[in-house]
Structures are given as C-alpha cells and as structure tokens.
Image 1 (spheres, rainbow, N blue to C red):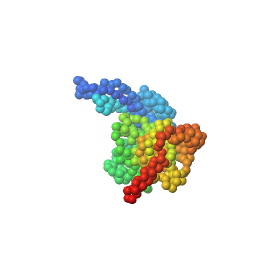
Image 2 (image 1 turned 60 degrees about the vertical axis):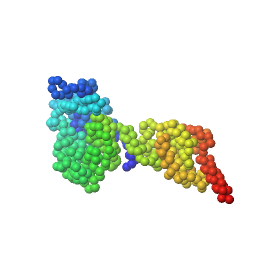
Image 3 (image 1 turned 45 degrees about the horizontal axis):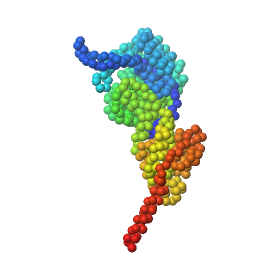
Image 4 (image 1 turned 90 degrees about the vertical axis):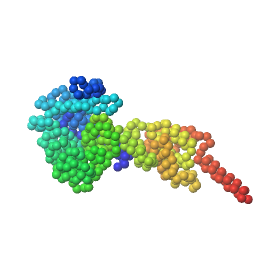
Length: 505
C-alpha cells in the first residue's frame, strides 16, 4: 500500500477490544548527573534529580494499545506489595480493565530499576539496572485463577495477545488453556514468545512473533539473511501448527511466513535509532490493533513497521499514537517528487489532515501561463488555512472553456509548475467544466477564487456553503491576466514579422 492508502486505512480503523495475558513489570527510572568517580570505590556517583515509574512487559503492551485507541483488559500477576499496587494504579490510570490482575503474596512484583546518568551535553546513558523478580512458575492455585480470568473474558474481545517475558505467569498450562479458550470463542491469538523457553507451549496460536535472536535459538542457528528468516518462519509454522509467523529483523524489517505460501519481507525505513527498548512491544501492540480490526497481515505489518520506527527514535519506552503514525505517513507522501495526485489520493490525505484539526483550502482554475497574479492569489489563499489544494482544468476542459488555441501549456506542465510552489500542497487535474465533483469529494473548509467576483458568483460556492464551509474572493493584480499576456506576445510577434517584411522589401 502507498502511504496515502495506509493513512486512509488507519482513519477507518475501529477501536477493537484486546485481552492481554502476560508478565507484568514495573519499570523505575532514576535520572541525574553522572558527576564524578567516587573516592570510596571506582564507581560513578549519580546525583539524582528525577524519579519515574512506568509500565513494563505485558503492562507496557497494555499502555501501548491504549495509545493506539484500543480497549484493553489485562490478565497477569503482581506481588502483594506496594510495587504491585503502583503497577495496578498505573494501569487503571490508562483505563485498562484490571479485574484479571491477581496479587500473589508469595512473590514480588517484577520491578526493573534503571539508573540513568547525564554527562555534559551527551545523551543520557543507563549506568545500572537492578531487578527484583521471581522467575519461578506461578503456583497451581494462581494458574487456575489466570486460566479462569482468560476463559471467562476472552470471547468478549477481538484479539488475545500473549506477552511472555519468562517471569512465571505464562506457564504451559496457562498458555494452552488460553489458546484453547480463544479458539472456542473464535478469537485470534498473537504470541510474543519468551527467550529460551520451549516454543511448544505456544502450539495452536494464530500468529507467533519472535525476533531475530529468539528465532535463531529455536532453529539452532543464527538468522543472518532474509532467506534464513523465511526458512525459519516456515519451520515455526509447521512444527507448532501456527498459521503465521512474523519474524522481526530489526533494521531489515519484518518477514511474514506461512506454511504454504512464499515468505514476504517488509523492509523498514532507515532510522536514527535512539533506543530499541519497547520496540517488540510496539510491534505486538500494532499487530493487535490490526488483527483486532480484521486487517490483512500485509497492511498490518506495514503499519507496525511505521509504529516501531517511531518507537526506536524515542528515548526509553514511549507511547506511539495514531496521530503520530498518520503524521509519519504524511511525511512519506510529502517527500515524493510531486504533489500532483488523483482525487481519491487527495481525499485520503485530507482526511488524515483533518484528524489533526487542520483547515483545508481549495481553489481552481486553468493556470495557463502562470504569472504573478496567480502567485499572489495562491499565497493569499494558502494563508486562509493549513493545507491548499489546487484543482486545474485538463487540456480538454480548457479547450472547451477557452477555445481550440488554448491551453498554451500542457496540463502536466501546468500541474508541475503549481506543485513547485511552496504555498501549494496538492494539485488535482479535472476534466469537467466545473470543480463540483472535486468540491463534493474534498469538502474543503474554504473555497477561494481570485478575481472581481462576488462570493455569490463563485462556481461551486453553493456546495461549500451547504455543508457549512466558507467562500472567499481574493484581490487581483491590476493589468495582469493570461489573456493579456498571450495577446501581448501575439502582438509583439506580429510587429516583429511586419518589421522583418519591411526590411526585406
């Protein structure tokens, strides 16, 4: 899909319900200036000035899903301690349903405490991480509670995400019971597997999403090329009876594999990577949104690639929103060599702009022999909003309006000259004698026409006013018009011919 098509798809997505099962983690950050080396021991002294708690592990997946406007229910385990209470409160603050979060007095809440130091003007760097956790599987009693929490709720959701961090909540019993409950409820299951555990526990899921290293551990050799990833993905699908494997390959993108079809690599755009923390969770979350909305795998992966790219450009674990993904996709389309688009492409782009509250301005004309009068009125039109779309009459349309000797300049060249103007965002060529079809499709906030018209005389004004838009007329540059320029050129050419004839005589 093109960037514009992806924006249109994203705009049409609903707000699915996701059930997240997995290892809940509380991430703590202590930040400060790494000032000096201690006199007591050869260690850095961190003068702390900031402390923060964030959701991690499966809890971070919940937060990322909320950022993507997904309704989320969480199932997992915390300790019966202050860290567990804090984690649950953070989930509640994000409007995550926590009825399936179980407090287990026999284990601590998994907590990762990172100490981050600044040194001069350099980027902050993590200098130490302290983990509080138990990696032992939960007890049989907690297993039963987790299984019951999933079984009673999964059918009310559109997708089940299993985020296994190997901290004890995702036992084989819990995972298999969850997959079976989802299967009976007709709910797809997406698994982000833990490193170093037997993958047989995920058998029967809909999608498995390992990264390059995890896949290498499973197949017994490193994944050094797309061909390696394709072969490994098929092995995963066949051995685990899973229809789809999506292998994340860091800077190489993602590989989509199925048992019976050729694997497909989805490259990612080159990025300045700030921090890869949270990239896997971001991919899982975006897959949850797409599959929960019944998108096809290819489109879902393309959107996940964009979301993951935005994630790694931010420090630490960060939330990526639909608006940020739209803006990123718009930047792709705006970086293309031309702004000349079809009506359907312009409609899709404008929809994404309106999501950000931007005001759309439209004007139209032949723009044959682009001159200072045109430039002046286009700049004035652009000042009336955030996005200027210009409709230009095709060659056939100009001939019908102006006569067989017009236009002087071909429609493609006229469109290219307009697109080169900084004040113009998009150019649409139309064949009709009026811009009515464009106005009905684009529904601009403002319709602008340059000239001596009154607003009531502007063609198409009645369409715009009917849905609450505005019609404006800009001024003109005295003495400048395409017709006058053509007449002047023709007169000068005639004079030159007459002068040449007299000299020859």
